[in-house]
Amino acid sequence: MIKTEIIGNLIKTYSDLGMKIHGGLPEADYDEAYDPIDSGRTYTETDIPIDETSAEEIVNILTGESE
Image (cartoon, rainbow, N blue to C red; front, side):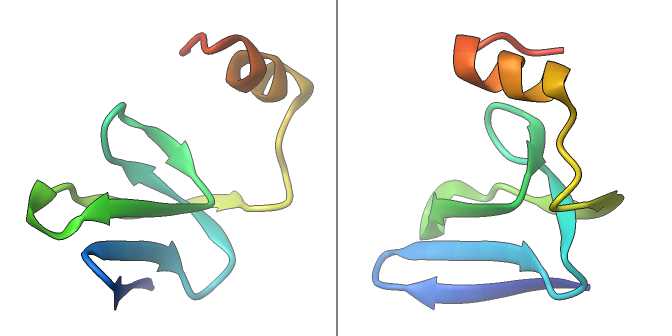
């Protein structure tokens, strides 16, 4: 289930089941997200466990490339 917490002027969004969340800006899969409260960004829970990141995903993250 998607959970949110307000931390200062940010909203932390995460999955309480340890799954990646999808959405945001740029739209992608994230372990957790921190957004300005007024951003209106939304996320959905995926079926991808947080600890499963492929080598290709790591390279994309490091090089700033998206799928």
